[in-house]
Length: 300
Image 1 (cartoon, rainbow, N blue to C red):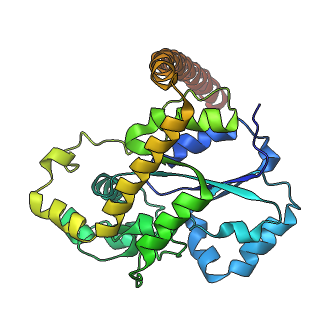
Image 2: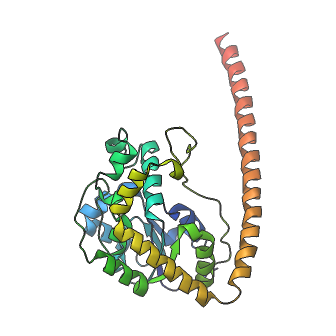
Image 3: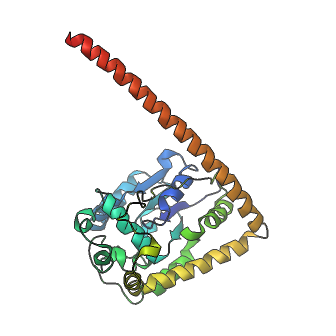
């Protein structure tokens, strides 16, 4: 079980390991205790926050885990005390990953606008999602996914203050296993084993460049447009270091044990998935053969 007393709010930053973490957290709650906001709903919430508040109120305090691509501040819609958690990702990696995700995901809000754009055009667009997006959300500002909005010079200071004062755990995608261990100890979770979720597939395709293949001028544009996010990322790493220090002297040993066990977990999941897929395909093939025979007989 877990020792979570307050409503847990997970500010899910796109392409920062959030889907994987949410899957892990969901194991610790019953289905009626979970409330998630999908990407397609963000624009509606931004335009009608009263409707969003009403949906939460309908659950009459039963929500114990909330997650979504929403900014800091959603605790105001809950009647019970709340704890925040979050995972950040290096801005350069996050923005490149999201570009390729938008290209392949036809349901994404920005797919139509970006499907014919190059990576350089995307990172130069000044849209909120490519310009200090993590700082926007964590400072409490609603971002316009496919649009452009102003960002106050105070946003970085406010985001740091929020992380320091109101987030129980601040994680880092590049240090995901470390993040999981401090979350486990903080909330009393038992099972934190995982396989990666919502990973952008087909990155081997020639149109998808690896980070090492991205031209330096594009990297420079991303860095120039995400100065706040770069500093916030560094600050978040510092906060994670503090959490690890507070964990205790067993952290290194616990981390090594977890990594070994999670590799075994991954292998088991992979084998069972492979068996399931092959079994399913055999069943489908047998069904089609029977169906074709029946169809042929009926037509006779």
